Length: 340
Ligand SMILES: Cc1ncc(COP(=O)(O)O)c(C=O)c1O
Image 1 (spheres, rainbow, N blue to C red):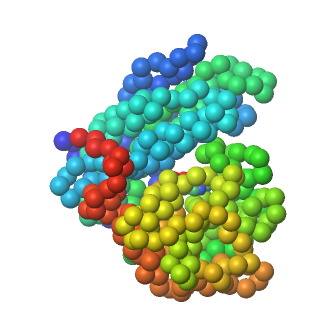
Image 2 (image 1 turned 90 degrees about the vertical axis):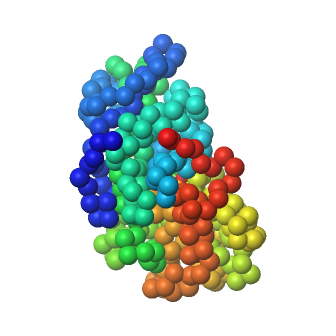
């Protein structure tokens, strides 16, 4: 196997060019067979709908190296399904689930030497994306589409171990009540950059978005889903049509119920009822769990467990899910796809 000279322990979440990416083109109603290419530049029409009208969506998932040297993907079928939900929302062609998973496997295999070693905490992040391309001017679906998957080695989110951070409530909305909040489309992220910058300038890790219709319920924590642990040991997470359905969140719900014996509730979480939680966190592929120290609401910081220590349930949830992802804890059926 080829070697790469990277300091695995020092990786952040930054773009590192790897050797191959996958590309497939949709034209005249069908996908071509797809292929691996070495070039990391794309050449598309200046009229592409992805550029002007945001007709694009993407995904994010990781490949993990296990203790015995195997490489595995975590629930890629869920990313395939979510990408197709996003595609349907933006009138883009769906990608057959097998094609999506095969593309991910091909990219990992071709870039095997970029998969960080077990124990470094680092992983190979995969970024599948689907964009409208081809000559076009008016607001309408593109004549052609490109599906591509690239990868980049990334470090563990928390280098010094899990650490709580604080969030503020944003005055901006992330999504409209019947908009594209549940789709993983670029426009949602472009609109989140200003609220994020405001939060960081005020000393917070990021901001929390409330529901766009009533501004009374928690929706998203930056680009992650919220969960709270109640005094009577329930795992509670918001339910709303404008939240991006987090694969990590649904996995944690299963972990809470089946591994930790907790009750699980997906329901409204009111911003003026934070007292019901003794621990809280944000969850997503990048960090798995970001423990929430406190949330600033109406000028006051509401602290859950502590602003410096991670709560015991949050830690157990994190350890169990990360254990499953790296192959140290037995996974529920169908969660792991072996690459080699
Ligand atoms: C807006 C938003 N919410 C939640 C998540 C977490 O989703 P997942 O757990 O599938 O990574 C992400 C990341 O993909 C996101 O961008």
